[in-house]
Image (cartoon, rainbow, N blue to C red; front, top):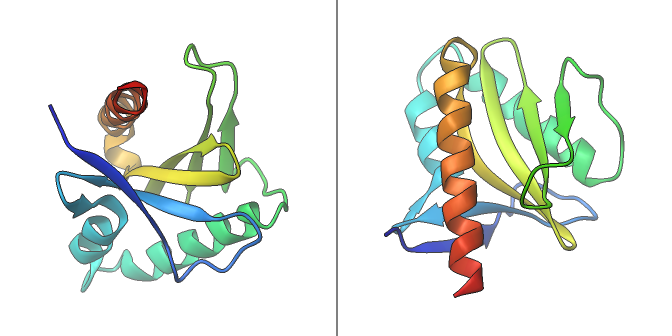
Length: 128
């Protein structure tokens, strides 16, 4: 069983707090950023953070930049933030957004499965 926590992302300045999931002392967004550093995708990562900040300020984004999934079995609203090559998945919790997973467009199906698995495990850990 994983150990979970959350941490506010200080680089995102928005009305609604945005946090990242911590899985076994590893911050998911920091790890994602570290893996993208020095690649051609790093500028897309920074753009993605601006999309997230924009949404956390209550502004809408086109479906090409953010997709909102409602009606999941656990009652959470899911978000998929999109750029040309990158994806970041988050959920809405009371008064905050929580970033759970980051991945790539070309592995989107597998990454979405990982996102939902971490989401389910995290939500179950809150009940204990």
